[in-house]
Image 1 (cartoon, helix red, strand yellow):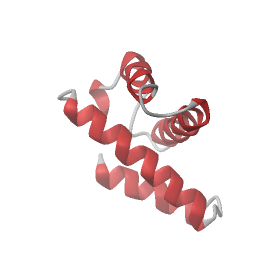
Image 2 (tube, helix red, strand yellow; image 1 turned 45 degrees about the vertical axis):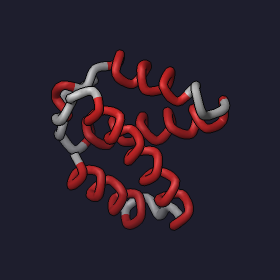
Image 3 (cartoon, rainbow, N blue to C red; image 1 turned 90 degrees about the vertical axis):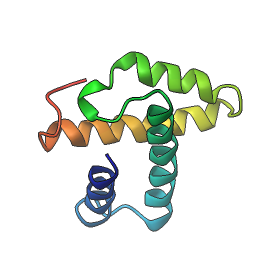
Image 4 (cartoon, one colour; image 1 turned 180 degrees about the horizontal axis):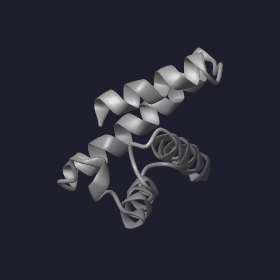
Length: 92
């Protein structure tokens, strides 16, 4: 997942022209999400389900406010749209 995350971040920079600050924020959120998935013994994209994203956001609610959770969800949604567009996944 890490290599695909890096490809996504490069795509954001070079294809979408996102700022360094935006890319850094996406990277931070995706690292937290991937770490959460690993803690749940989910190590491949194909095993991720919508419930895992919901559970992650619930997990974040213990330490993050509404804006932090919204930023995390936005990052995850963008990442999964990229995965589908680039044929890493069929859909979520």
